[in-house]
Amino acid sequence: MDNLFMTELSVSELTSLIKQTLEQGFYGLKVTGEISNFRPSSTGHWFFTLKDASCSISAVMFKGSTWKVDFTPQEGDKVTVTGGLDVYGARGTYQLKCDTMEKSGFGQILAMLEMRKRHYASLGYFDEKTKKAIPKLPLRVGVVTSPTGAALQDILNILERRAPSLDVLVLPATVQGEGAASSIANRIQQANNLLLCDVLIVGRGGGSIEDLLPFSEESVIEAIHASEIPVVSAVGHEIDWALSDFVADLRAPTPSAAAELVSQGYLDYQNQVANLHVQLQRSIENRLLLAESKVRRFDTKAMGMRINSIISAKEYLLANAGNSLVIAQKQLLKSYAGRLELAIRELQALSPLAILARGYAVVHNQEGKLVASRMQAEPGSLLTLTFTDGSRKALVKE
Amino acid sequence: MSFETDISRIEEITQKLNASDTSLEESIALFEEGMRLAKALEKALAEAKRSVEIVLGEDPREAEITPLQ
Image (cartoon, helix red, strand yellow):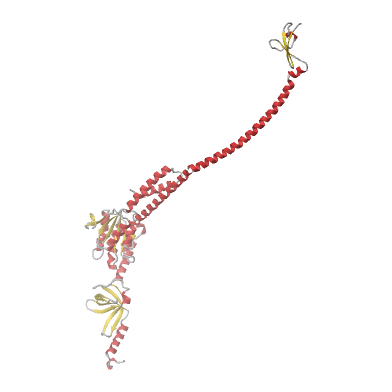
């Protein structure tokens, strides 16, 4: 087909040429426009029109690509898509086949946030050493969030379950769109001016990056930084972030997690008290067991046995002692008997009777006195003469 | 009531109960005191008596507070 002007073409041939030209000439495009006439199909493809002030172009995004988009486009959303042109021969139409889609300005928002983050970091707003400790047992938690959002319900439920005695004060704020940042900042200042609580949760549930933007606004950053009350930032889901996360004293990945963090002290105390309770009981049980074992030594049976054993030991000793005593006594007697015999024999040797037997006599006067001299025996006195076999009276003649 | 002091007191009581030189009479008195404190603490921690309130009005210098719902 060197010369189109000389060739007669069928519709299919022309369409094929157009298809080749458009698809090969327009690829890797990046197009920004407003979503219009958004028609998601039941099979997961998206059909819509991308337009600006004066023009519009049909667009399609197939199921294989739509799942990667983290939002569902709404009428009027400004988006940036990448893709190429696609010709649909059967209808003679062309459309933009989209591979990716993001909200328009997403990149600029990220860049702006990054710049703001660096700015406040350089001012020392995010320094760890300026962070205040979250009280272990707060008495009243202030919650700056939407009074109608699911985040508040999550926080209330979790706090009730984990710390039922902890008071909660809701500081209702607009959390997205116009005026949200000043509303949030205002509540933080109010809580501080009036010292309404001893810890503040500032947050909201998940949303688009624009929805979370108020939490990255200067007024909110300043209010959190100036807050005397420790602030827990709880914005969106785990993957979401806002600059409030950096300036706050503690970042919670979700509002529910923030509720868990501020009530953790109560839970710890509950566990500690329960443990102590068990320890107390164990200690007194041990103490009682000890006392019981001491008392048990004095029970009647054991005591009887002990006394019996003492008595039998003494009895044995006594029996032994008795034996020895009998033996000792016998020996004593024996020795006495020996000594007695000896003494008798000595006595007998010395006895005057033995002398008398040899012919001597003992002379007593009438008074019974021994007469050993002739001077004691006056003539005419009566004397008693004792012989070995008896006595006789004798009259002294001269 | 201070959780901190009450908890320290229970810990102290447990230590005394474990000490061998504490008399039985004293142990029982200590145990009763400890149990009384522990039960009071458990009650204080678990009893639902919180108030949930909401601030009305936007003025940062004053706040009208009313129960939520």
